Length: 224
Image (tube, rainbow, N blue to C red; front, side, top):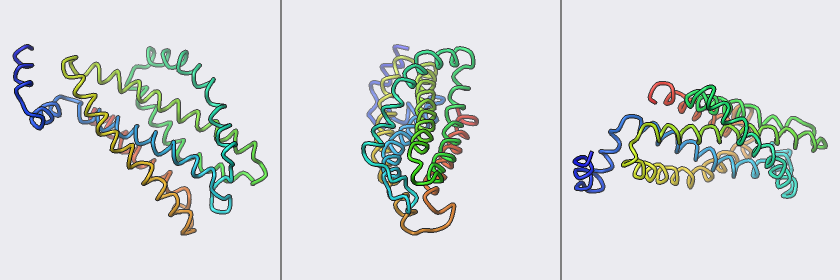
């Protein structure tokens, strides 16, 4: 191990980068971590943008106060789930199950959440409850994914290399975190402006997210 550390230290940054990528599971873990950061960035920006858009354009016509109220409703139940339910599921089912289910939850979420617009405009309370439920599912799935990924990383990589891998994960995820909201907002605003039928209406950006999730599940099942 000491010889390996000395060889690694003697490499330049480019050589160290390619050396680390040869470690089993490193590339899939970085990819999955980056995609989940992409989810968080896009979703965090997309939902308020979509919810505040005009009802006639496919939005929900929510005010800033309405959107803030929804996020407040999520805090307590989300904390209880993370403290009590997740440790039980992880212990009973294992990290692979948790990671897979977390992504399947995202598929159902992205498919169903835009149907909040199907409530009549004056049914604001029903739309709020609908959004609270699906945002709760999204936060739970995200927590399951990131927690399982952290455990996978710790199990797959030696402590000597863990710091470098975490650095690569953060660097890649930062790129996704920066570009995600820009792309998501552009696609959503385009789909609302062109007034095309399904699937190219306001559902389109959510369907794209489903496609990305299916690619991620392929990586989980066949590359991890």
